[in-house]
Length: 192
Image (cartoon, rainbow, N blue to C red; front, side):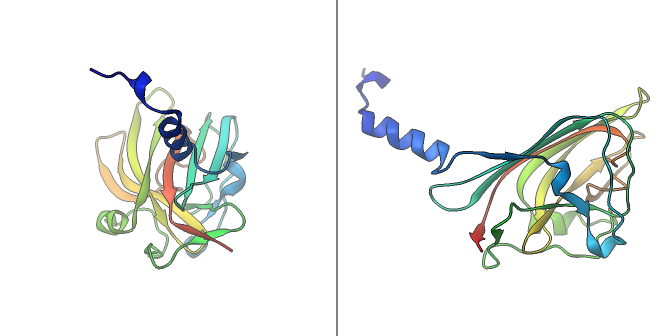
């Protein structure tokens, strides 16, 4: 039986190139990219006690933009109002021939699960610790909101066992709680 050592350097080089993409990671901060969704009433959140704050992206060889975001923080800050949106890196916008925008009034919840699933790309996890009273973990999807922004939407499990569909924002995993936010996706974008 042949082992991996029999593969040519060309094959390994191609695989490595595919996994790495054609550019290096650009790293910035996630907190600088988060604002209130404008249709929500537009009061921006503030984050305090942030211990991890990364927003990384790179272009992929076969098109698209790989984005990774991670934030961990302690309780504090202000919730703002409505759902939170995250900006794409400067110079990119979503490819409108591929994505569907979810702009439904920007509220957090109200049974939008089917809209989130239909519009969602990429994935993520939100967790929070409610001051030792209990906590929660929710899976989310990256949901394009406009040509240059997206939100994190999913079904959020509450401390009391209740759940509702909506977006990360003042109602779910609000900025004033101690929580973590992570997401990862390959986004269909074009350079502008």
